[in-house]
Length: 143
Image 1 (cartoon, rainbow, N blue to C red):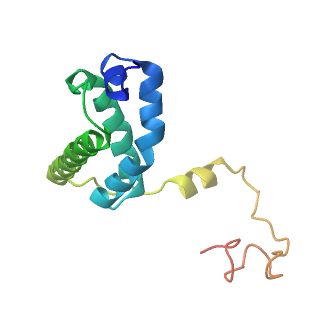
Image 2 (cartoon, one colour):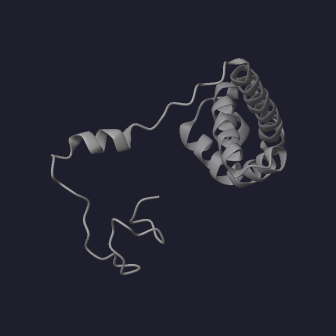
């Protein structure tokens, strides 16, 4: 008699765990997406769910049916933990002092790097045919 999928997963069979992933990853993802409402968070929940399932594989009962309900229960707990962690991070970030605005020094730096006597190009703008130095209709001239 061949051992069941449950027994092989419980015993730590890597190949059988791969089969388990292939069989149930889509259902776990759909469940995670319904819980989170975010595809990126759902992908994170799926990966954490299977990591946690591997860690908890010894708790699987050797007898029984599909392992999908077990995986969905783990996914629910993982989604709650991910949501809780996001709320905690948001709360911690909101307690930090607001960063001061730093002025942009790029124009001053570029101006100081140009040798004396060099001027801005006066070739016509390819978009609007006005000299670049005076163009105000497109992004090529001074703002």
